[in-house]
Length: 329
Image (cartoon, rainbow, N blue to C red; front, top):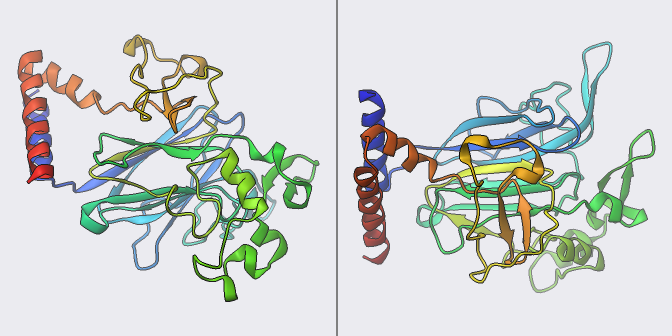
């Protein structure tokens, strides 16, 4: 108990001083199939302890990353291993021939979650990108962070079924497994933002990228789609959910942010059933499962440690006061 109390006090110190030694990324598979997440660090940044692993339906995995890490996550699908031990995937394959991507990038089309931690002014920058096409629904939820643009982003719509025929990727069995970008499909400068189109003045949304943007307004749809698709947080951890099922409820949030009634009714009886999972709003309109911000867990833990809600509450208030002071002054 003494050790946990020290950890709570240390967490308070980190909050007050703004020191964040690392972040955690938790990946959850809510798809109806097994997926194989891949991870690639940005150029010049050391690889993480794992660069690829398997997530069965309903499983999750949390990894720690350095505070200055940058890179991308994606989900590989329909993966197999042949008689020689070569590992390949129908979508998102990274070319390593193994479970670990080991520096290999996602073969388009693939939905990407991209991060640069501790960037300009100490902010994390992140997005969900369909620039390289789409293979899986994905939702990124910052937890415990701060900032004016620290909110959820992603693409939770199944674009494979709605994909134009000229962009469709089919499995051997004829299943729609991915949707190419127009750049990948046609290799033309106007779609790839290359050549004469390699600047924001000449590279404009195409009819194909607009299909992606209409379905997933907060995701990158083409190379210069920065204004509505880049998000920032300070001191956050991140929850990445593959296949977050849309809730049929069309609830709206007056603040345009997260649902004020988020979180399960009974934290001691959480279920893996999508219908019982907490929600958040995207663009203030649709409520999606699997996006509950569980940052209050630290307060619950410290309440137990200090055996007093008042003391734990005072700790939280003190931390918040220092954070506000730092932002204002």
